[in-house]
Length: 138
Figure (tube, rainbow, N blue to C red):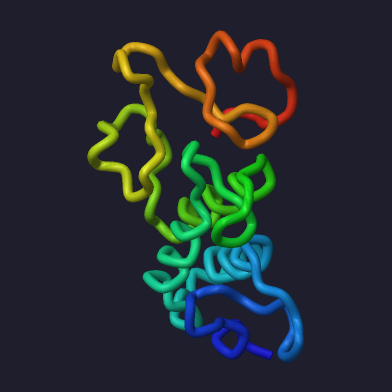
C-alpha cells in the first residue's frame, strides 16, 4: 500500500487501508518515510500541513486530533513532521515570530521572556520549564 493511498482528503493518514483512526502519529509515520526516500510525490504536503495546524490548541501545543488537548507527543509529531516537510527551519528561535509557518509564540508578552514546551506540551517560560522533566528542547 503506498503512502498516497493512505492519505485522506483532509491531509491526514490512515495506518492501514481501511477502518482505522487518523491522527498526528500517522502523519509522523509518513513524513520520515518521504524524507528518507527524498520523494514527496506521494504526499500532498500542503494538505498535511493544514491538517497539522488544525490540531494546534490555544496554548500553542498540538493535540493528536483537532480540538483535543495538547501534549508532548502530539507536539513532537506535529513539529517534527512540519520540520521534515520543510515548513520549519533548523533554528526556528533565531527567526522572527512573523516568519514562522506555524503560529507558536516564541516570546512572552514582554517579548523578552522566551517560552519553551513543557512536559505536557504546553508553552511555558524558561523558569517554569526548568522545574519540569520530559520533553527535550526542539
